[in-house]
Each structure stands twice: as C-alpha cells, then as structure tokens.
Image (tube, rainbow, N blue to C red):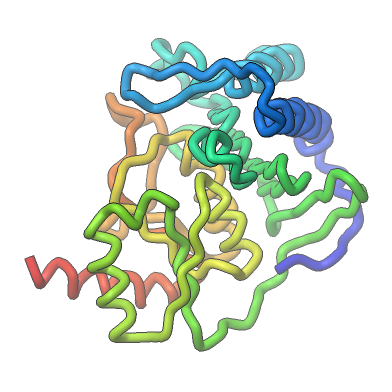
Length: 284
C-alpha cells in the first residue's frame, strides 16, 4: 500500500527516472503495435524462450542511456554481453522486458527490471510496469516509492494490515507443474488462501501493494528476474530466500540461473511458507 508523498530529491532517482519513463513509453508503443496486429519480430533463443523486437529496442535504449549517464558502471543485461562479469564489483543488472510470454499473450503484466548490484547485494532497484504507467523504486535508503507516470504523483510504501486470507502469487505457467498444486494443497490445510496469477516480476510489485503475501517459485529464474524485486521487498521487512532460507546473492556463481525460492511480505508469511515447505519435504 502507498500513501502520497513529495517528490524525492535523490540524485540517483532523478538521473534514472527520465531513462525508465522513456523506456516505458517505448515498450508501451511496441505492445500497442503488437496487439494491433502489426508485423512484429519474434525469435527463439538457444533455451527455446522467446525474444522480441521490443526486448531489443528497450535494451538498446537503456544500454545507451546508462552508458552516457554512468560511464564507469558496467551493465549486465539479459539481452547483452556479460562475458566479463566476473571482474565486476558494481554493475547495473537489467531485464529490459521481463514477461515476454505475457507480452506475446497480450497480457500487460510485463515489467522492466533494473537494479544496482554492489558486491553481491542489490542496493538500489527499479521495477516498472509500462502497461500501468507505474514505476516502483527502492532508493539506497528508506522505504520504496511509487511514481505514476501520467499524473506525476509520488507515493511512499506504508504497511498494510494483514488479512485472514493469505494471497499466493503464482506464475501463469505454474498450473502445469504438480509441485505447485502439492504446495497449495498443504497451505490450504493451514490457512484460507486465494491465488493471484501474474507473470514476471509483476508479482513483486503486488507484494508491495498488499495483493500478494507469499510467492513460491519451483521452476527456474535468472538473476535479472529477481534482483530488483528482492531489493524492494527486503526493504519493507519481507524477503526472497532459497529453500534453505538464505537470501539470494548476485554475480557469485558460474551460472546466472537461480534455483527455487520463496518470496514473502513479512516474517509471519515466511514462517507460514516454510512450514508448508517442510511438510512437503516430509512427504518425499
């Protein structure tokens, strides 16, 4: 939940806001063209996942803008070259279009994920939802902020009282994977739940909005999918951890693929999520 506040004077936010706002506009225009049935470039990557002309256009724009504004900070982008990343201590981490499948299914639940990693931790993050013209920002200090592009209104995170019904965030593809059904069945024996299905890092934004309490993930993601969201929800007293309870670290492994995780809105939700995980492990 968010309440109105004054515009931030933070230099990093003021430098990045025009870049991300423009990137949202580019992505909105691409999405409208795709939905209108215009000729649209879609390819398959080596892992068989789709990549579109929208991914490339937003990536090119943000890459160029970051290089001009922050010439000394390298960029690790899903659509870029990251062969030298092992030598980087501080870097930008970018997914120019998280939720390409949502985009292609004409669901406006895709996001732009941008974060600053220093050492192995994310210290600053932006999650933008172009379809809603909304940008969520985690400054280096303080609570997350939200910026509404159309109205220019700023608001700051404020804690929501918990309800008796636990809201579970799920990917659209989770219904085809039996692990999710098993996990939800165990949770249902403990508490009343409702399912909130959405693509991409959109679910992290919904944790901030009080619409998701627990987001379990049993199939793979990459570091650019989780870094910004983890930063935002950690700042409100929640978190994103692996199944042993350890928070994700960044650029520390040979692979950029993540294992499974549990994201949660607060410690009460973490406890509940891990109880269910423990019961699930005991069955196997």
